[in-house]
Length: 185
Ligand SMILES: O=C(O)CCC(=O)C(=O)O
Ligand SMILES: [Fe+2]
Image (cartoon, rainbow, N blue to C red):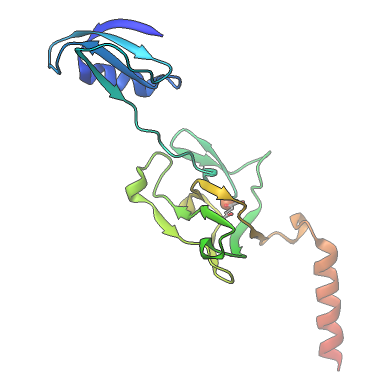
């Protein structure tokens, strides 16, 4: 896909930057000197006397890191339309876990910021009846790691402190009148 002279270190960085890069090869043995690097779209090895580097496949998150009441803007998070800026709290109720055999992977995670490495993540393994609850802002960037098999089900619950923006105001009204009726008894 591309042939260019550079060091192996530079080639690794360049391959990471190109979404289609599967790896690269060059003639000869590993060296710190610049070499003629052949970047590869597909991983087909042929010929002798070449050194090859294959790019490690990074698992894709099934639900990439996000916050529930703002959207990423640079290093920060903009709490404004068109996002669900009125959300104050979130809760995820897991309906099953990997032990059910319904799916593999799919750990819920919190991450300290948008770009953090996987090692910095705090994971919650889904399990039937387990609930994770948190404030909905940028202090709780979270997501779901790759579901590698099957179908994963969870119930997401979002709460707001702004009664005017609640999606189910009729439910609020019903709750209020039930409470009022209860107080009267
Ligand atoms: O499915 C999950 O565990 C989390 C889903 C989530 O974060 C969302 O829908 O905003
Ligand atoms: Fe979320």
